[in-house]
Picture 1 (spheres, rainbow, N blue to C red):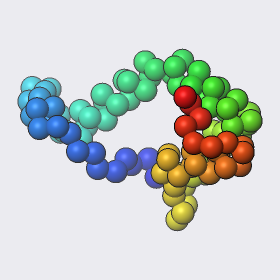
Picture 2: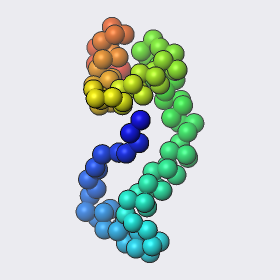
Picture 3: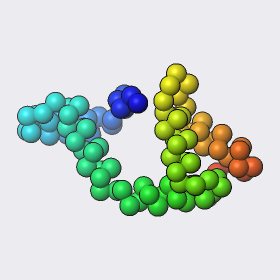
Picture 4: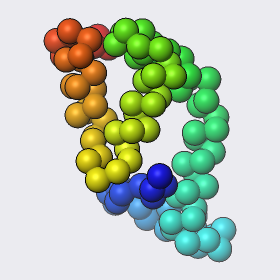
Length: 101
């Protein structure tokens, strides 16, 4: 599994603040961004699990099956975006669009 995340463009103000923070902490921008992202994922584990359960239920899947589909969509040469996977799951569940509304 490729654990790298593609490029993300920040608003100029946030980029400059990140640059200054990285300098103050003597870190590269990439390492500081990684640390921030890891901390946010860790602090939101319960919310992520709740959202996975809601999504799995909406698609008529178990949480484990949904997780497997998400990991599968992110691997190999035929990677899918979250939007592409969501559309595919909606079709297989017989739903129209906007499942979460």
